[in-house]
Amino acid sequence: MESSEPCTSSSSKEGLKLDGEEKLASAYSDVQAPKQSCLERERKIIAAKSRPRSSTKAKQSTLKGITGFTRKNEIPKEPFQGFTSYVFCMCCHEQVNLKKDRVVQYIQSTKHQTRKEKYMQSLQQGKSVTNFLDKLDVGEVTGASGGALQPPKGFGSRTSEEARIWRIELVSWWMKCGLSLNSLNVFAPFLEKYAQRVPDASHLRQLIPIIQAQELERVKKALQGKSISIIFDGTTRVCEAFAVVARYIDEEGNIRQMLVAMSMIDDQLIGVTTAWEIYKIIMVKLGIEDEDNIAAFMRDRASVNDVAMDQLSGDFQCSEDIKCFSHTLDHVGDKFKCETLTRFWGKWLNLFSHSRRAKKIFNQVVGVSVKSYSATRWWSKYECFEQLMRVWGDVIKIIDELKAASINEAGSAVEAYQMLTDIHTVSKLRVELAAVVDGAQPFLKACYSLEGDGPLAFEVYGEIKKCEHFIGNPHFPNLSAICAELGGTQLPRSTEYIRLYHLGEDCVRPGFEYFTATIMGKLRPQLDLFKAARYLVPCRAVELGLNATLLDELKIMKVIQRGKISIHSLVQELPQYLAVRWHFTVSKCDDLLERKSYFTS
Image (tube, rainbow, N blue to C red; front, side, top):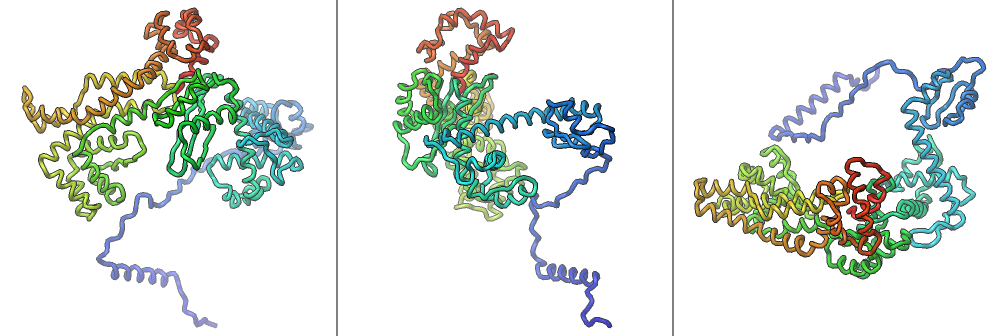
């Protein structure tokens, strides 16, 4: 019996699809299809080339009288687990053939040796977690607030040790990934399928104070007996967020640093309360027993930090007060006076700050993306100035394209165009732009080179001296080129050339004066400290011709003023110290590493 329902064949479906496309074309005939973004693309799956490969599963052994238990007993030091027909490697998580030559070859492989080392480290960490849990059960673990921690309900000694370690490590690694514990409830079914049962996030959240206490014990152990530099800073964007970082040198001579405190405070921190907070973190939270182990405090030059250091210097008399040179170098650019450039920059910034279409037009005209400005990034404005000067020939074309696209944020495009078409304004604008780019270059490079994490104390003096020599012998190639274009290239220089060149010099002079008055004036004692620190590198000491007379420059260091290290002992070991430059051995440089930690800023 034939059905009365119409039969929808594949050809009729294709016809309906074509009808839909025809309707779309007729209804929107005058509309241009939007261009797809480069992010919206077809995902191409690259098929793997098929090739024969051996299975990771070991073949069943047919050796007579040999079982996995036999091989396991023959090599008891290897992390193997014996079975009837194979041996299972606990560190590589794979089966091993029972043939003796295969077992020997497997043990000697690089893969097995690497994973075995990691496996033994994980076992050692498991023992430390077990010891920590034993201390937790008897109330010997101190929390971040100072009181004894108690295990939460369902995490006491009655819970199996394997389950407790599993929960601790699960929460630790989950938090290291930056994931919320609430998302663990969604991921739990997958973990339970292949691992152990995952408790609810509400229970796991109670383990965070325990993990915090475990991490604090690790930090205390790492800092025990070390010479430490303390870095502190705060911000008031949301509330008073106060962070403290400890920096030290480990047993192998590597620079290490770790965040040891992050406080959220309702009240505004003043100088005395800042000093109290730092003292509490060092002496109570970290348990530093000897104040002389604090080698230095590093901070910016905010007035509240000056008051705090006046208080802390009496408690930690061997510590140096290190002010951030990068902050001060960044302020050099803030002192430049370029009124015309600042006015044009405001219009230019308005055009690209909030318009994605404007940035796309800039990219289409110039071929590169417009540099974004950040109010909190050092020298960000002057990086944008440098790009503006490079694309100056296309600036009017860019503004014309923006006006054609009806992009005119608060009239910025029109006002910027008016500035560019006025001959006197555009001449002054180009001169100021060239002078600022040339004048900021050495300070920008010094600022960025001194904000890293390496042993920068040995490089500070050289970077600052570069800036000082630039001020004494300035070189403005871009400014000279612009003045020659606007004032003529003939010699002797025309009056217009000289006037424009002096105009550019006047723009950057206030910044140069600030550098001289601040770094070469107020911060001169600290600069002398970094000058003396160069002698703590054997290669540099040889190059600088270090001798018994120059060793007197080290007396500026508080560790020598307080008698922790005597100049007399340094003079005695000077020949051996300079010989390190030619024949370096760790045993001869233990004292060097000890002193070097005082100046790792």
